[in-house]
Length: 59
Image 1 (cartoon, rainbow, N blue to C red):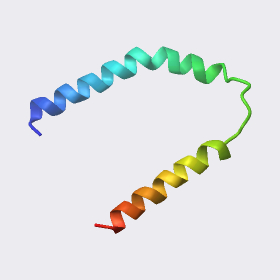
Image 2 (cartoon, helix red, strand yellow):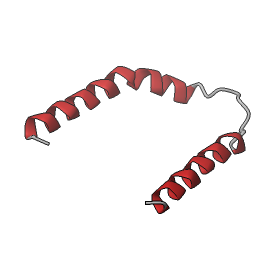
Image 3 (tube, rainbow, N blue to C red):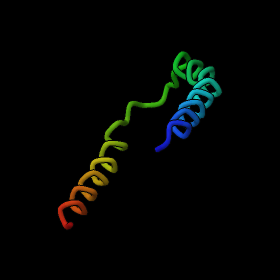
Image 4 (cartoon, rainbow, N blue to C red):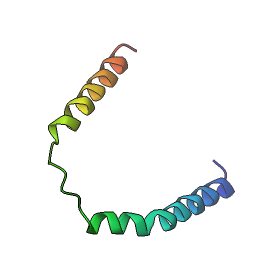
């Protein structure tokens, strides 16, 4: 990747962080009262990881 592409990518990432920064800070301060149901998220993520490892091993 050329230097100007790296600089442009860094600038885009910085702009996105500055654009979304206030919303992320507000969301972290106002934590929702959602239940801590991590298993509902970890099981699908684990299955995806296992599937990717299976695909890699098939190469």
